[in-house]
Length: 473
Ligand SMILES: [Zn+2]
Image 1 (cartoon, rainbow, N blue to C red):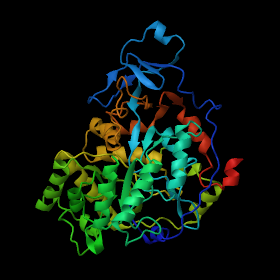
Image 2: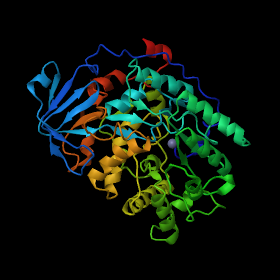
Image 3: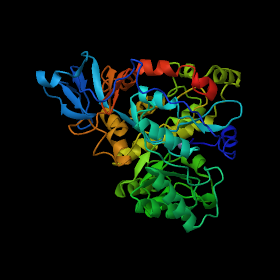
Image 4: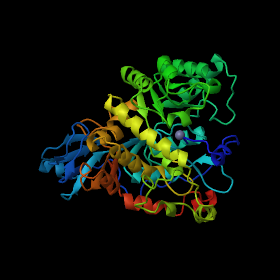
């Protein structure tokens, strides 16, 4: 979560919810998926490969053993023999799978106000939306998330790739030790690196702790991203984090626009992108190749602005009847005007950084409280990137290859190229003429396995937030 509104903050100090949901969805059976073993030929339609800036007519693609063996060439009869053939219509477009690099699985699912990681059904929502790779960006139940990732990797559960972040580093972790020593931080990093964390997320972290986290993570070849502040109350400004060697930054750019005697967000809401302070911090991001993950849509949820959180599928139906009843009983969400200004600041700073050559990623930081789900919000964030003036092709690269770079997997994923893993999805309508067309997901492929997004979503209806007993039925 980006912001700690009172109702949200209340949840942060409670003990971790033991979300022991023993449900493992069958890997086979329903017609919503095929295994990645059978070769697949995809013919017709169009391709956006994320290697160029245009769409091209698809002559043919061949996927064998989960990999792209041929891209955009005529597929021979012998190659087609024994393969599953997918013929696309002329208004269908193939895109690389999306990366959501701020993809919280955690959500608030009822009256206790407790946020917990939902890794049983939420993974299906991501996948059904063409989001084939996710970085959770801070986990409340990192052990459970790690187990979910292993089940997905083993084909025992359906979901996107999960690049585990492990627990938050900083006050966002329940029970975080503000007096942790260098040895404590190193031990913590070593432990989560050994368990398989793929990158770390800091939030509410003191400068010395962040320095140790970065040092140790880099020793393991792992990266660090952070939700940062102004420097106020022993928090860390992004400027200092960049000088320490941080790899990525979330939400706001920081720098001298912020006053270290004040909290960051109200000042950031007034940021002047033509100021020297802004140019200095933007230049630092660019010169140090630090990636910026703006999560622009996150504050819209709290703002007076309807744009950003519209429904094209009523996401409320995926929650259990109990959660739906709880949401209905809530007072109407109070729109706070100050979120409008923050949202507008995020829009203009993100565009200004992009114009100066900054590297952006797509992250949702979805504030799920029974109404919206991050898998859908990936398309909201993408749309927002285009709304601020980023060309659609560049926005699609931000959602694909830039995410792969952020996760250190751009040699295997992020584009549609021969030799890469076959993570892709098919949409209806040209995304370059209307970016909202990415919402019309017709087919999803991960590692060569085909999923029917409608069938996947149908499996989740009424399930999120159901008690484990109910979910097992
Ligand atoms: Zn977050």
